[in-house]
Image: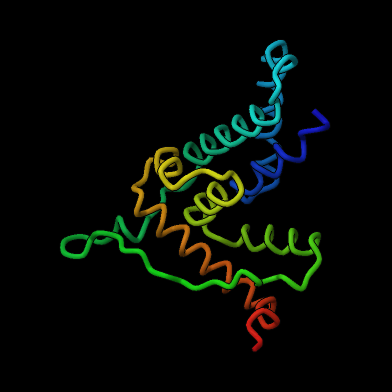
Length: 173
């Protein structure tokens, strides 16, 4: 448990954006691990199992308890209702001049400021390394919605970091 508690908690915290909920989910994950201990003890990949369970329990939690999402693409009707991809440029060097510990804290805080419908797909893609198709299937939304939400989340992250003055060094010529 000690070897994996940080990974399980951070997985849940990134997806929920709430430490208290993440703690509850982490407890559930380790209860499931306890129930499956004989199998996990001999497994060559207990970390992968725990990460998968943490991700699934968190997604179940979000779908059960979240407020109804009102997506932009769901509000449009008639002509032009298909979501189109918008290219939002975001620099790769947003926090390049900051040490890894500070970068981690800054990114975690910025993630918490994103609306849930943007944060969840972004975390699943970048931190859980799920494909767009897998995310669409997990969240039961369209592929174009996943792509749009991830792009908007990246743009929002860039704005959050810019507001905090983190982009000046990256954007300076």
